[in-house]
Length: 154
Image (cartoon, rainbow, N blue to C red; front, side):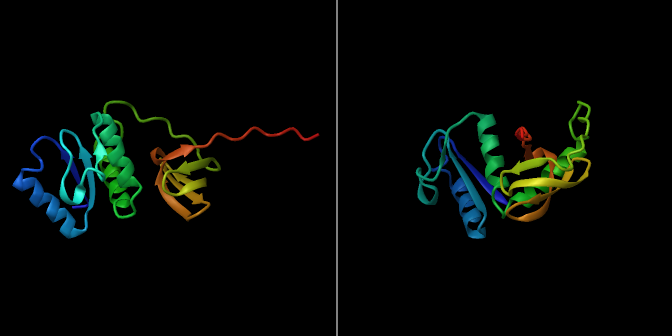
C-alpha cells in the first residue's frame, strides 16, 4: 500500500472496518490523505487535518498533486501513470498528440522547480533542473515556460 485515501462519508467513524483500515495504514507508515465529506474525521485524522469536501474532479486533482509532491509516492505514481497510458495507447480513442522537439525549452516542474530540457525521447524529457540536477520526467508533468521577450539593445 503506497497511500491511503480516507473519504469520510456518513458512518465512517462508526465503521469498525474503516477504523481497521486506517490503523493498518498508520502501522505501515503509509501516506494518508483524508477528506471530510459528510462528517469530520476523529482520532489521528481529526478535522484540522482533513481536506474539505470538494467535487470529484477537485478531489482527484488534489490526490494527484499530493502524491506527486511526496518523495515516498511520486516515483510509483509516475510509473503507474506511464503503465496506464501505455496500456490504453496513451490517449484512448484520440490520436496521440504530435511530439514537438522540446530540447532547449525552459520548463517548470512542481517538485523539481525550474529547468531546461537537455534531451528528449518521445514524451520523456531529460531536464537539467537548477536545484536538483538532471532528472527524467514525462512532458505532461512540466509546464513549458514562455521565452521572455528579448530586450532591444540601444
